Length: 481
Image 1 (cartoon, rainbow, N blue to C red):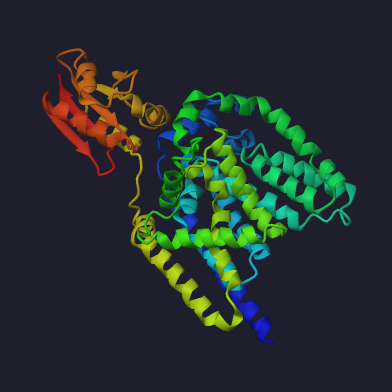
Image 2: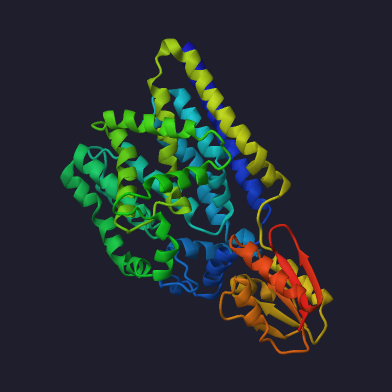
């Protein structure tokens, strides 16, 4: 009776955590935050292309799985506001990943304390919350990766009919078209089933997924040969002499736990968790966690796929389970100590995060583009003869939002190159026709502070200067040449 009572409390507590995690995701989504540059680029591909065109390589240096884009486009048929429609699928995947992670963690972790601790970290991690409301496939990658690995515990070849085997094979193959990183999970699942279960039936099960990968191969080869994407994520590849490995690990820890001043807790728990799992490597429960981590390291080492920041979000839930694994080894007679340590660590993680991330979400104090507002402001304050200048860094956002504001003024110049340094800006903008009034539209991005600073410095040397700005480096800069 006491055990039933403990189980009831455990499931009620985990249910509250899951509901709270869903609530904070839906809340952030409900703000309909304006698209930032990268989202606008993907949104333009989805909106401007036919369904069939989404199976081809994309414009604006974008890469996203075809079925992910198709379903995002499908939501536009029912939801008119693009920020809601195109982010609905990422939100759905993120919300569904909460119960899936809970089930997955209980298959790996024996202790209820460990499972609840892992779920708390998963439900309230800011990066997982953030990508629930961004037009990117990262939350889909998390959900599909977890579902694929979870299949190991439910595939019983003796009880599976041919029809069920075919349906599972079909779903595994289909998942690749929603998430490119699903291929990594499929490889791990194949190895586990091949090593621990029936080899012949495993080969049959993976016939359709193998065919799916072959069909997708031409598109993934295009991604691999995309120099822009490869160079952009170059810092996510491990050097052959391993010299950048400590920095890479540190950058990832800072990205996923940015607000924790005492990151030594995270490092120690990770090392201890990996040590425990390595000792139990003969067990499938350990392999299902360590195999994907080793694979991610190898992919990064051989310059195939970066293990860096948001690109490795798909594997982040496994690191949370590694963090919680040490609590599995606490002896029952030390259960009070177990609760105290887990409670202290989670309180530390949560309080550090509440000071910044959650308060920013609730107060709507987060980085955001205001291209539409800037265009509206230009329409209100500009004269018929004034000229709107779009820097290359703001071009994609302008392209997406330009139709949302009726501009009577059609005098628009789009710069054809990126200019960040003052000398470059002065040279380029001084070549604009003389005797005119210009408005430069600069929308937020992580690389904008330098551009903003130098554009303002240049404008101050001109006549009739005025800068309308906010703290996120969204600005409408006026000057007369």
